[in-house]
Every structure is written in C-alpha cells, then in structure tokens.
Image (cartoon, rainbow, N blue to C red; front, side):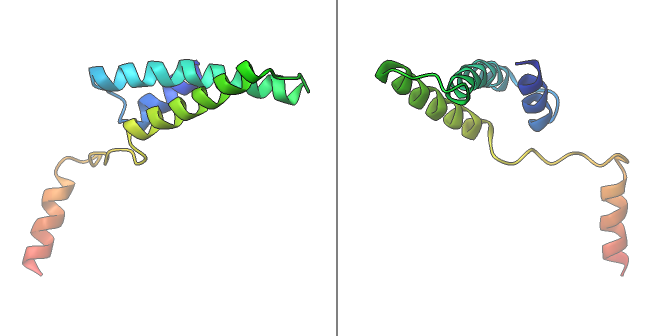
Length: 94
C-alpha cells in the first residue's frame, strides 16, 4: 500500500489536494484487495461466485479511481523558474 500511495502521490505532482489524497487512499486499499485476489488465483485457489463478484467490483472501482486521478501527471514546473520567461523572450527576439 505504501508503494501505491507513493507512486500516486508522485503522479499528482507530490502535493495532492484533499480530494486527491482521498482518491489515493482509496486506490491503495483497492490495490491491496486486487492483489489478494490475484494471489489467490495464482495459488490455484478455487474462487466462489462471491469472490469473483468482489474481484470484478474491486478491479472496476480501482480502474475508476485511477481514472479520477487522471491518466497523465500534471506538468512539472521548470527547475529554473525563469527558464520559461527566458524561452519566451528568446522566441520573441528571434
């Protein structure tokens, strides 16, 4: 769960908003549930209809939660805050 939290926090730019934090926490829990079902499948454990229904619901909820966070990370600010201004000034001078 820590890895999922860290990756998603980084994905949203490192400083998630309150709604993003809630979505990240939900995604971490759902990722754990999906991993538990995956482990059961890989261990050749017979899944009941109830288990299968939960697996489908958890995978779909996880997918929708990730989609709500956005597929693309936000643009990162340049390491040099004046780089963008210099670039624009250079374009106008040319």
